[in-house]
Image (cartoon, rainbow, N blue to C red; front, top):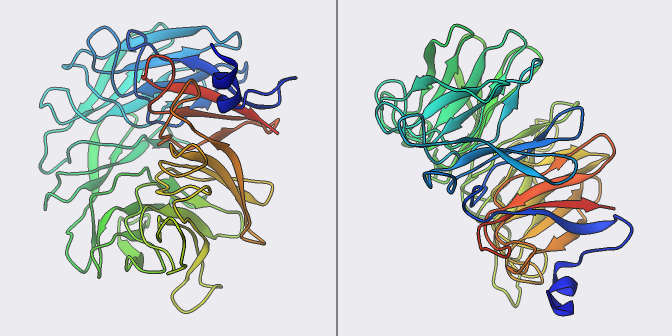
Length: 380
């Protein structure tokens, strides 16, 4: 490894700054697109969308000594191509989705127990139950799981579904598309304290540029916001973050205000949604230029100490994406790392994990020594 590689990866001394914790080889997984989770001992868990024994993706564990263990390699009938993150229950079982594979080739909901045995809890059939879940799950206090499928359902535009603690799947909402409803949800849903679900759709809505929606406890859907693709942004690929005051925060991949830039404009926005903002409810906190600040944000955000943390797929000093934070009060962006596509990784699609000590963990889908992606850490 040359000194230039070390410099471009910005690996800092004394444990601070950016460093690579694991580089995927393909055999142990490849092309991670999902956020990581961490247990109380500090071990990290995640998925990769390819690689493993059959090339169809894996579930992995990365321990505190940075030793990676493949917990499960998908073979097709048990699922394939997991893009979403994992949920871990109180006894250590892991749950997630695959975007394809299963009994009908249209994706699964799966469980991996503490002994490493995988069980398919549900195989999607397309209609009416949904097809191709891209995002991970959220679990309520009773052990029920909620998620989205990008396609399928009654109208073919995707669903919000529930898998209860008896492994029975129920469609809570089928998206209708068109001007009155969203279409193609690619992100996870989130739960509030009273059981309402919130999420985004990549397309559909009054301008065809996606929506923010709410699904209440009676499964009645309300479109909270329709993106226009202009200054307000368009095509939200990532999901939402709910602040204690009830404000929803998220990102949209495209759009943004027409601010002249040498890089062209614009490459997505970071937004907040609250009735306290204005008549529309939406407020753009930051517009990405696609230059050194990053562009094309596709991940969920993390709220930590008054700032929102996330990643962009493009832009940055190395032109291969960024990890960033935006302070809510000021709208000021801070660049945490600009990916180069070398040993540090490239095009981070997943959101970030911030633990109680403020250490940030994430994955880059591509780059690394074997071009199969990386797991990284950042300490301020």
